[in-house]
Image 1 (tube, rainbow, N blue to C red):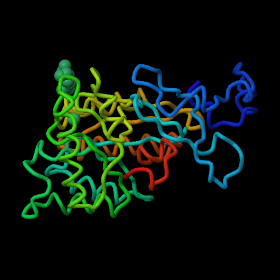
Image 2: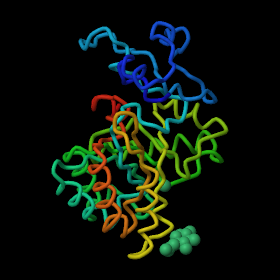
Image 3: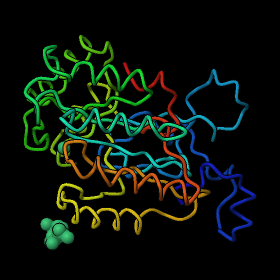
Length: 289
Ligand SMILES: *[C@@H]1O[C@H](CO)[C@@H](O)[C@H](O)[C@H]1NC(C)=O
Ligand SMILES: [Zn+2]
């Protein structure tokens, strides 16, 4: 049901799907207040249009507010594949940026960055990393948080969560002048009050629905395992399917092989790539605080 938001009702009826009429399906703000609650299911079918200034007509389907306080695993815009790269920047990131820019049209990806993970400090101007971050922004990629040092936020205290988030914010504000509003929790886990804490800091929490497992087979022959996994798990219908894809720019064969293969498949099947914000229908102004 999750893509029904974006299709004209007639199209769905034509596909033979039994769905209620829009007037019955559309929630009101009372039914879906801003805080969906950490244990609620992501209301994937729809969520209420909170952009009352939208000039795009009266359809509540066109613009959507991205929720906080829950884990988002899926795009809400069909046809988009959001390539995401976690744990960087690292020594392969420049090569990845070159590669993404070399496609026609260029690929815009999302980088869930750490402040100190595979490199000791991304704000050290004697290293390439501050420049790499600025380049990400200037070339249309989305920068999002993956915490300062890749701490498990489920087992962390509230004070540690706040430190992990704000320390990275401070550095990004200084280096690239943006404070992200999207975060992916390390190890894809955010329980025990973590969602509430991140909501309190204004974050949308985004995991993924296609895991390439690129970290398991980072070799010239092994990366084919990830290529095959991607090809078999990506849907085939851009009118209904989409994906938020987990991979890592800290692995050589992700950058050397997997990205080309993913982009080839994406385009051969008629999908386009976009940032996480784009695939959630969020304009660029919503990606940063
Ligand atoms: C890929 O990784 C998995 C998990 O570590 C392993 O079992 C498998 O043998 C690897 N395959 C290749 C071709 O390296
Ligand atoms: Zn990670």
